[in-house]
Amino acid sequence: MSKTEIEQFVLKLMESRLQQVVEEYISRNDGRIKELALVERVVRVEEELKSLREMSELRFDASEKRFDVLQKTMNERFEALLREMNARFEALQREMDARFKAVDKRFESVDKRFDAMDKRFTTLQWMIGVVVGIPALVIAIAQVIQLLK
Image 1 (cartoon, rainbow, N blue to C red):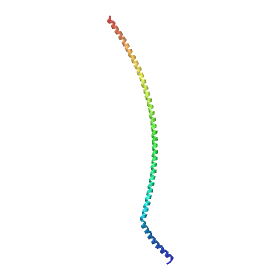
Image 2 (spheres, rainbow, N blue to C red; image 1 turned 30 degrees about the horizontal axis):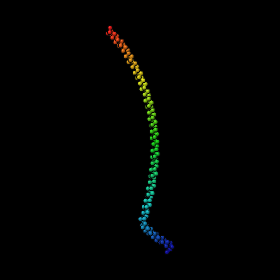
Image 3 (cartoon, helix red, strand yellow; image 1 turned 135 degrees about the vertical axis):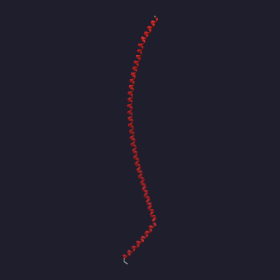
Image 4 (cartoon, one colour; image 1 turned 180 degrees about the horizontal axis):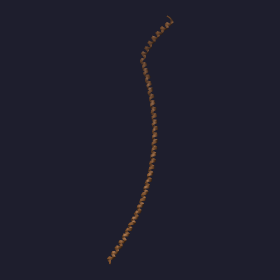
């Protein structure tokens, strides 16, 4: 036998023996390999869950900040609206006060006219009383004098 034949024979023998040894090793350690694969998967899942939790927290924080900004903006708008409404109500109140004062002045002028008319009627009543009373008195005196005669 030549050296190449020996090498080929040794190679074939080693391949077959190595294949058997590897198969035995794999069959013995198949459970461990599956366990290691499961442990590795569990670790990856846990890392992924941790990453998801961190991302969720970041998103919730961003949402909370956005809601805070919106809340501040809405509060500022409501305060501006309240100031504007108060200014309008105050202007409306001033306008109504001015109108009421004008109405009060008109009523005062009407009261003065009624007072003047009341004085005229009182004067007229006295004049009518005097105009009717004096002739009635004269007639009554004249009749008394005629009766006495």
